[in-house]
Length: 277
Image (cartoon, rainbow, N blue to C red; front, side, top):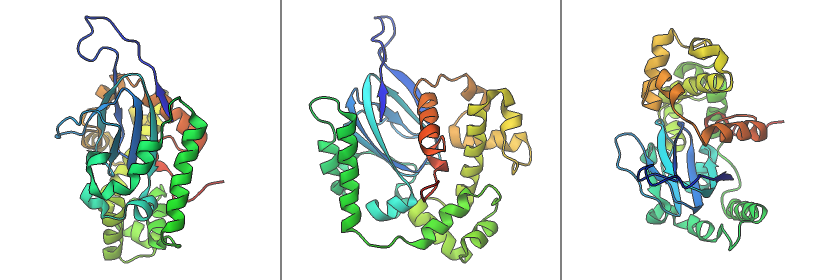
């Protein structure tokens, strides 16, 4: 749960006074439910999505820009295994897309959680209990076994020694055509793009947690050179590394630190498909 508190600002601060802007990194799918100010969100090349009670984002390979004021936000990350369990439609059909959750037929089953999550007064423990109860009930009502191919693909994707589609297929013990099909259906993208995104996110996190490295010291060992990393930065974040370094991160920095402390990985794209420890 994220609490955002923004001063109201003055009359000369423009139409977004009392609000801040930040960017979400490429990630797996996410359901976000809001109490307070509803954010305006935008993926590159798409129209601005005006604020609503809940937004649903499919798997992304692009940075999502959002502007929000004082608000309480529950973000529920949906990893590929969760997509298969709780969403079920082909993830490739919702890749790099964001929706008002209330408008989408494939999300109808999530509406009871969305409309009941927040009570009359803020109560983080009660809200978390509602989320846990909803998904535990959904698990009991669904299939009893997870698809082992999804876990195998995800585990291979997280291995920093895996850098090619052939290596990923070998690590997952799947034929290349099966790997492609499983990834597009449950992960949203082809294996090649997933590996490229993973390599980029490892580098980005390394820099954000230790800026003293500078970009050249943070880039993943699988990059051929700095120019390749810069191209990936433009591809995934829509800006250069220097532009991103100079961009304020009023929300994401603290969210990443909290996630690192609680989950062991600072960004959702690096989360393991199985409990660690």
